[in-house]
Length: 235
Image (cartoon, one colour):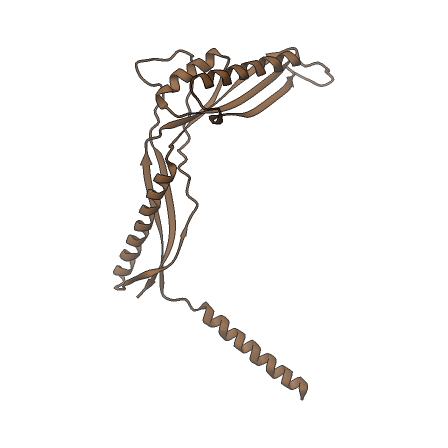
């Protein structure tokens, strides 16, 4: 008898649990949409990636020459009014280089020392002047540039607002087509924005000389986007 009571109790508990789960799974009538907002902004600063590279048969000399050039670069940039926090060493490398078959050889043909750096130039009209001076103090490699906007939070907020309005318009259009009425917001989620990062752009520097009649780079536009997923109740 006791075993029957326990079985009966277990059945009741299981049935009750299934009923609760079924009730929890019942969703109200919803319309799900994705809204996209986009703001196009002219960039006002540029991030320059460049480096110094020295080759020498003596390891210590290769390293010392590279360090000296890097120090000269930093000093030059500071004299140009660039804040130290906007100058960063991003890569350091010293390695032996063997021409041809290196098997069994104990001495390399030469040593190569490299230092890569980045600098944030906050005035686009100073770009050509800064780059020309970098060549003069020892920079012999430019790897690329990327354009940015300084007041990114402001434009991200604008893009988010446009995304929300876009989602509401889409939901209203969908429900109107079905003869239904759009209700209040049930759930909303913002997808990770692109952070205002521009599309990649690169510049090839052929000479330290620059044309003062006009800039050698074009910033184009930075596209700041926001995407939101919104669920509205259907009334």
